[in-house]
Length: 359
Ligand SMILES: O=c1nc2n(C[C@H](O)[C@H](O)[C@H](O)CO)c3cc(O)ccc3cc-2c(=O)[nH]1
Ligand SMILES: C[C@H]1O[C@@H](n2cnc3c(N)ncnc32)[C@H](O)[C@@H]1O
Ligand code: SF4
Image (cartoon, rainbow, N blue to C red; front, side, top):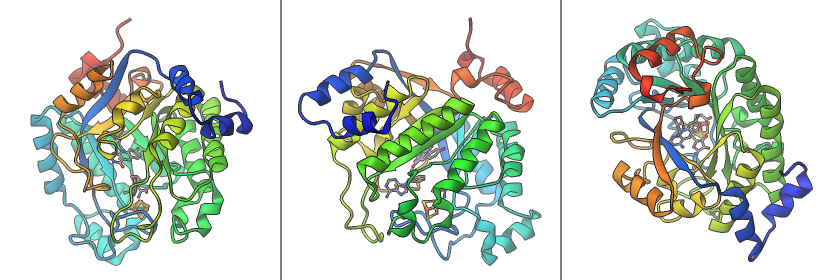
């Protein structure tokens, strides 16, 4: 195991054949999971302005997806065999007058109320919601737990220093203290949780080590983290961080391996669309999940990076020596009354019994 900052840092500084030993230590034979989803970006309005983001828009047009649009997409996703509805969008969007007026005309007070309503309709229709709407409070989390199979929030980095750099200078919601608090709140509420780190946004190797150790501390205390995304920063034309160097393949390999060694109890996810050529190398470094893959929608956060077809994902996974296994947005070991609301649990028992642990 890697327990101290020095030990983790030593891994992140490795060179030459030591890296091969590291990969061997992290990689276990077996299966690699993915979830069939549809991405539903309710709004591009966001109170933050992250230096790497192309998703946010100042004048979102339309300000909000309407219930009919959302439910049309949900039905289409169901007909294509999806199980997950991924609700990811801007933080505190109801602070924008355009969004607030639209919410009001639909009869909702804020984005949480609206999201709750859509999750409820989605769950009734048969998809399992996973919501990541940025930082929200304890009461909002408690409310959304009732209609979500899992929820998520990227820590991005545990470094408060990035709040003074291009990455997060204009993003009060990326303060690691707020993000850590929300991840802990989700732990207190027993919500199966997805978090992750964004690699290459100006953080030092030492800060990468600290971020992993911070997530380990939270997981030791609460045990609700089901997966950690190790996401590589992608440079895109027009973003403030356009000239920032992307992380190298070996930097990513070392992060993935360190994460797997530190978290034998958590899946390590790398998004296949951001790693078209290199994804299979990450499997050999301990990554064991591809995340949500959509047969219909784009990755609205990374629209230039299409997801591979599921057949292609299977080919890549098998050629590296692993089996591709479909999962729900909630991992098998969290499918229980301890972690899911009665409503969500009943829906899974009814519609997706094949994903439930049979002992
Ligand atoms: O397609 C994407 N899915 C993203 N997902 C979705 C994720 O792959 C799946 O929804 C989960 O694995 C649940 O099945 C996120 C989920 C979170 O909770 C937090 C961050 C992300 C980030 C992305 C992302 O950048 N692109
Ligand atoms: C939804 C998640 O997508 C990630 N994200 C946002 N912009 C980029 C980018 N340019 N490259 C890679 N990941 C990005 C952030 O980590 C965010 O939390
Ligand atoms: S990454 Fe999320 S929080 Fe940051 S600007 Fe984009 S939408 Fe907002």
